[in-house]
Picture 1 (cartoon, rainbow, N blue to C red):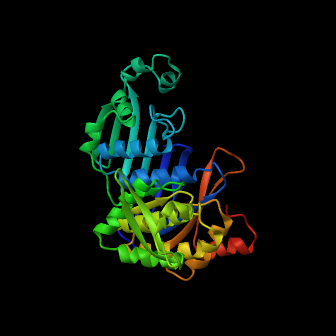
Picture 2: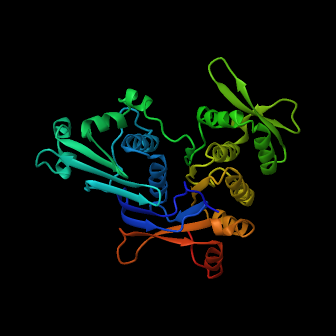
Picture 3: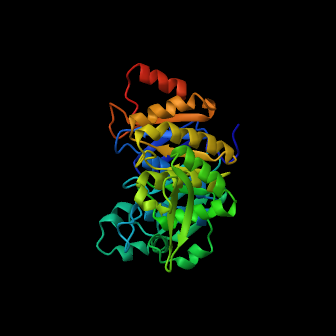
Length: 352
């Protein structure tokens, strides 16, 4: 069973490292593997942008969120780097949406000229974006777009709401303010007991999770079976933080999509099977939340394959990204079900 919000196939043109990429047969739970710098995270971001986009305004906001999360090291300036270098048109097409973004000039200035110019603001005045989302199109000055990317368009942001059942878990442990936001949705749904049950399955020592308010903020604490008082979540290591974030975000993203970068980070390899078991089970219970995750770990992929066979394996896929031998700049994706993945293991083929 699938749902109408599922991205079943996607075609990208000039999105970051992808000159052209088509991936088909995507399902409810999808694991992305491959070598370093082969486009796994970029593909995850493309899917996130697609999922959040309903019209030209929401496309700009989705791009802004994506860029600012990745360029968080620079709070003063974020660069628009989503298009493949020296290209001026980007396209994303799926079974749910068609997106085209073009950079145009009102003069004869080329896009490559703008990237080498010393007077960038002058050139920006001659550029504008043409945005088409399905049959809805709009045009905006390029300078205005870069202001929004750099968070100078706050009034624009306030009146443009993105889908709230779409979430992205980065490769690092979540800041507890972000974790509180995700957990707040669990409180609204009255599912605190369910989350505590999942935590006990992950670590039998855990009795329950609690938020402790402070004067300025709030912190997460965990009640352990052998402790009289709850201990700080931060004292438990990054793995538990990540596990809580993933489980809560699946429920927050019910009827939507969840994107998890480097799903195995901070989690011991002995817990990988339990992690996948709960992801498979919870994503189905949460009104078929569609999950996309990346990994660098062979052990994580093997655990994924083993547990997939015990669940609805027809709704579970592994996508391997690789560069072609004859053209190292060309990236291709191979989609495997759990049986095909197991055959790769038996043949001793590298699936990372």
